[in-house]
Length: 206
Image (cartoon, rainbow, N blue to C red; front, top):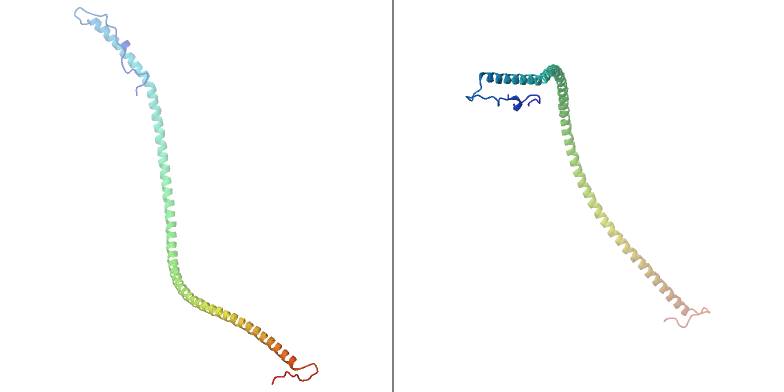
């Protein structure tokens, strides 16, 4: 990027005014050429001075950048040392953690073996309980069937009892009616046979 103080092209003010110089042969004379070279030399010196002035802040910036670069390098070296220390510390911590994890893994494997053995025992016990439950269910089904049959028989017995009770009631009522009829018949018979004077009635049956 061009600096604002550095000229990037020549304008008309940088060119020597030689339009008034002319010769009969069409070429400038030695005096005119010398004058022209002086003008050009002055212009170059002015441009060099401008460039030097323009370079001063750039040089300062470069110097500042170099100083910052040195500080940055020193800081990077320090950070690298710290990083190395951190890495070594992390490596030691990782080794300790790895040893701890290996111990936990060994304990876990031992626990796994114990649990596997215990699980096998539980599976065998579960099978025994399952067989026992199956046998118990069969026994319960048999008892339920017997209970249902007995319940049905009990209901039949209750129905028979109700029928017999109804028959007893009907027979009792029938007996009562018969006794009443017999009583009435006997009462009428003796009333016709016996008179008030305790004499035999003439209406005795033959």
